[in-house]
Structures are given as C-alpha cells and as structure tokens.
Image (cartoon, rainbow, N blue to C red; front, side):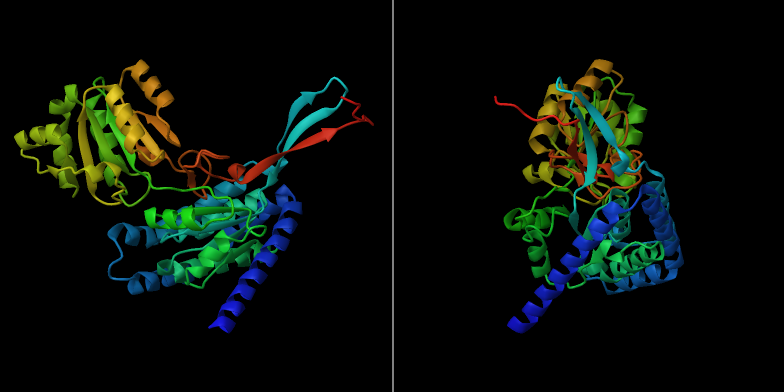
Amino acid sequence: MTVVRCRLMATLDALLSAARTAQRSLARSSADQRTAALESVARSLDAHRDAILAANADDLRLAPTDLSAAMRDRLALTHSRLDGVITAVHEIAAMPDPLDEERSVGTRPNGLLISRRRIPLGVIAVIYEARPNVTAESAALIIRSGNAVVLRGGSEALRSNTAFATAVRAGLAAAGLDPNAVSLITDPDRARVTELLQATGRIDLAIPRGGHALMAFVDATARVPVIRHGAGVCHVYVDRAADLAMAENITVNAKVQRPGVCNAAETLLVHRAVADALLPSLGRRLVAAGVELRADASAQVVFARAEVPSRDACTEDWDTEFLGLVLAVRCVDDLDAALAHIAQHGTEHSAAIVTADADAGERFLREVTASCVLLNASTRFNDGGELGLGAEIGISTSRMHAFGPMSARELTAEKFVVRGAGQVRGAS
C-alpha cells in the first residue's frame, strides 16, 4: 500500500511540475496565440462531440442509484448543452485579453511613472462535482488568462470529464501551446483532493465547486488559498409595490427553469400586504410545475384558502439549498424584515427584489450582501454567460479578490510597474 501511495504521489508531483512549466509558457504567449488556441479548442470539442456524448451516456448509465435528480441533471449532456459549451469557448476567445491590460496610477513628484499590469495567478486547482461542462469552460478561461489548471471532478462524471479534457488538450496541442496547461486527475481517491489542497507552493489557488460536504472538507483541509463557490440559498423578495404578474413570472423562472443549480431560488419572501393577491395564483403555477411548497403559518393560511397544497416550513428549511423542486415561502411585514431574513439565512450568492418602488429597489441593491443582487429580474441571471463574461470558473462567495462569477479577468492579479529615469530613494 505504501509503494502504491508513493507512486500516486509521484504521479501528482509530476503533473504539478508539468502544469507549472506549461503555465509559464502560456503566460509568455501572445494574446493572438491564446485566441487562436481557444478557437482550436472549440473546433476540437466539436470534432470530439460523439466521443464526449458517448462518455456522458456511460456516466449516466453507471451513475449511483442514489444520485439525486439535481446531480443527474447537472451531469447530463445533450447536443444543445454541448453546443452551449462550444459557444462559451468562442465567446471567451472573443473577450479582451486581460493580460494586455495596464492602467496608469499616476506620476510621482520625483518623475516615477506608476502603473498596474494584470498577470496570471499561476496554477489553479478546480475541484467540482457532477458538471462536466466545468472541465471545458474552466480550461478555456485558464487559457485566456494565461494560467494553468489542474481539474479534479467527481467520480460520477469521470468518463465525461476525461473526454472533455482529451478534446481540450488536443486543441491546445494543435495550436502549438503546451497541453499540460490543462490537466485532469482521474484517480477517484479523495486523497488526491487532500494533496491538491495542501500543495503549498505548487497550487496558487483552489476553487471548490460543490455542496456543503465538499466545502466543509475544504475548510478542514486546505493549506493553499481558496476561493469558495459556496451553496446558493438564493432569495426572491416580492415587495408591496411589486407588479404581481412580473413577480409570478420571476419566481417561477427562478425556481423551476433549472432547479438543480446554485442560482435557483430556494426561498420566497412576500410582503404581507400582497400575499393574498399573489400567493394563490403563484402557488397554483408552482404546484403545477411539481414544486413542493414549505410555508410559514401566514403563507399556509393563504394557500389553504386557495386550496393550494403546502406543508409547514421547519427551521432548517430557511437555511437549505434544496437543489430541487422545493420552495420555502415566508410572509414578512416589510422590507426591513426581508433584509433581516436574507442577512440571517442567505449564503451571499444571489438575491432579487421585485418592486416598482425605486427607493425600495435601490435600498435592497445597496444593503443586501450577495455576489449578485437583482432588481425585477430572476436569480438565474447570476451566471457568467448571462452577465456577459462568456463563462465562469465559479461564482465566488468569498468576497476576497473576486465576488460573483469569475471569468478570465478575475483569474488575474495586478502587479505594480514602475518606470524611472535613474531615480534613487533618499534618506527618510
């Protein structure tokens, strides 16, 4: 057993060394070279389409029987979803290159010219569950930003991830760039995750994407810097001044359109003044879509009068990311109560207000701490592609360095650049 473990650690060590070498090479490449590489990756993904979808079909067929519906939905690929991945790669290729960005800070009294230039973060580990599209989209953002990535997906998506990584690496090689800028760990042993999270000096940043169990493991284990892509207990608040038809449509979209993702709504807060007018119709639409309503006492009374089935919400429901067709519903007295609930139970991911009151809307946008706050729009828009970023490597809920969807620019840092003409510092 010791010999096997040493061999595995040696393999990981070699992979990290190759990633570091590739990252330095990629950082030296030009913006045009990286753009050409991304277009090559997009073509390669299309060329490998049949292999990717066949691998995904195998993953779905062999998935554990206890895999949740939400996880199975995240795992599943279709031609349309694969087209979306390829489109995202094209969009990333068309983005401004962040490594071309240098901004002037100013000129010092002694004539020094001060500016800041964007640079890659280095070698990034992405640890994720179920979603094979993350493999390709993370790789594309890494290429655009001049980094290298070590990917470790969940065992349930191993075949899909391997097929994606094979296509991406082939596209890089065809463009003349080092394919080791994108590496996939295929060993399902969780010890490899521990080794990544503790690879100080080898991994510059870890980005975990997953549920509570993964985040708890990362918190207990990591020795490298981490940006969390945490749980999404996302809220929709319907204000007393809301357009109720708009509120219905936004709530149904936020909950039903794709319930197994992190930006789906999990809690609906309704101003008590509009509960009787909103909840019967909205409740019927949600139940017709298969949603189980878990309501507080006030909301239950309204649902019962309208013969809309609901059940008691328990304390834990306000803190739960259901990732399925379940919605917690609560009536609140006013905007202050809604803000207090979100502050107590939200996970700083996404929160939306529906209102025609401009002051209430702006107060909500200003006071709610979340990576994306929305006025009269669905929480489902907290997504890199929907926000014009092309794609995302994760949605940061950490508030350090980046907050919200992380695209290529968020995968860089700034260094100071000082241009002088012989200045030296005198005694102080």
